[in-house]
Image (cartoon, one colour):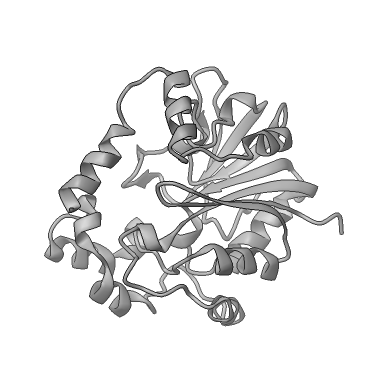
Length: 266
């Protein structure tokens, strides 16, 4: 069963032509059905991504919208990550072969200092918010740098289809309390739950049980933990609790909760 799951996922990494991959994704329910709506929110506009680049926004991804954007800058928590290796601050953000590089900020997702209010037309975040200990603080900071009425594309993992499937969705009230407490990225509140319930058979990159425990205990260095667990209900409620207006939401195979939200005018 686990080998079968890995083989199925590897199929989607094959170097197939873009149009063929898009057609396969549409037929198999692995493409955002309302992608035209998302495109209209970012086309010919300038945005900020959190934790990119994201394959989901690439030409063969589930939501291929990079190619329509005027430009995208990026924020990443460290100059070196387990996902992208070495990262440098400056005009170094490569996200699409047909676009000029954007600016790469080395910043916490919850503290975009030196980025002025109302700078960007839109914001992208794919599979990054679950790695943040204080998601409401993060969303409110993202909202600050987006122009009034600007779009925010936020993608979260559907826990039922990931290595979190043994856990339960995090109540939004818990995330509100984390914000009220001023929780920061040193938080290991959920560590014991993660170590007990994480399905290592669906997380081959984690290595052995011993390696996974060691990595998890050093989460401030690597940010690999999923602090909170999401389904379609609490993800929608979280964005609203942080002051966003949710426009549309889709569940997209294999494990994406895709939300389009808007920063209110006021």
